[in-house]
Length: 263
Image (cartoon, rainbow, N blue to C red):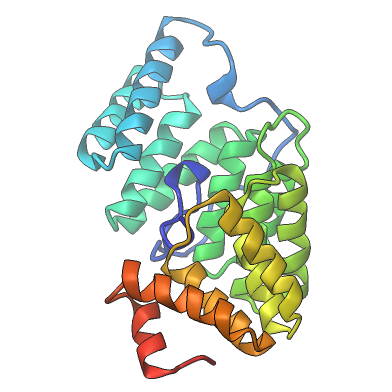
């Protein structure tokens, strides 16, 4: 869960093209277009194709997802979620210019849509335009009509990590956790940040909460090994290490364990 960031949470992979955009910033808050009742036949058809394409995206069928997004945009050229979906697919296909064009078209059509603002913010963050990205994240998070503000707060935290601002990263992960106590990504990074500043017992507490909610993975177990090693609890350290060796042999974390690279 931690390493493979969920597409449905709109956390995009790196590698998109930079460059100037044609947007002027997020607009007044609105309900996400995808949640609005379609105004007519064309918009209804576009919405159906976009929703179907999203399902294909989630299942990893990028070709069909892209085709559904294109059909949606052809049926209704002003349906912003179709371009948003198109942009997400192009990102995963490493088609940078197409991804940027589609995502910017989406934000131009629906500047007040919090989901689209969140996605576009992450696109900016991944292209070294972090300061521009934050205004989109906070516009999305502050939209009272957005049902999942935990997403943009999480993304803002990740973006602050990119510019090595641990303090603001932690503040935003905390906000994300207030909005959704089950946000495993925020919990993991709060544990990691506590470990990094030497607060090992807080790091342990966060990690225990994470493992209460999800099955441990290689990344979280390796963090657990290092936390317990710092605390000096050899039994707990060995427990994490044993799971890492047994369930995740061959991973980078397992290799680090074998090589004793704890720092």
